[in-house]
Length: 91
View 1 (cartoon, rainbow, N blue to C red):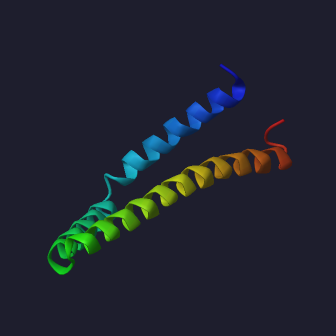
View 2 (cartoon, rainbow, N blue to C red):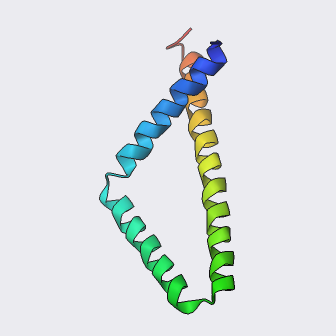
């Protein structure tokens, strides 16, 4: 396994742990309930075709947000290492 592949695997593990920790928070539970309420509202307020469209939109938004989250997390770690090197803490 290359260094880049090992680094990527390590980052994925760190991100998965951070997400799991966030999902244990009260903030996440409140957001999860809001999403559930929105889903219930879609069931009662939209026709089937509109509901399907809304679900497709939400799925795409969540997918894009997930990819962005991974990129930002990885970039944040790289920036941290760069900063530590610039400060002389790491060589």
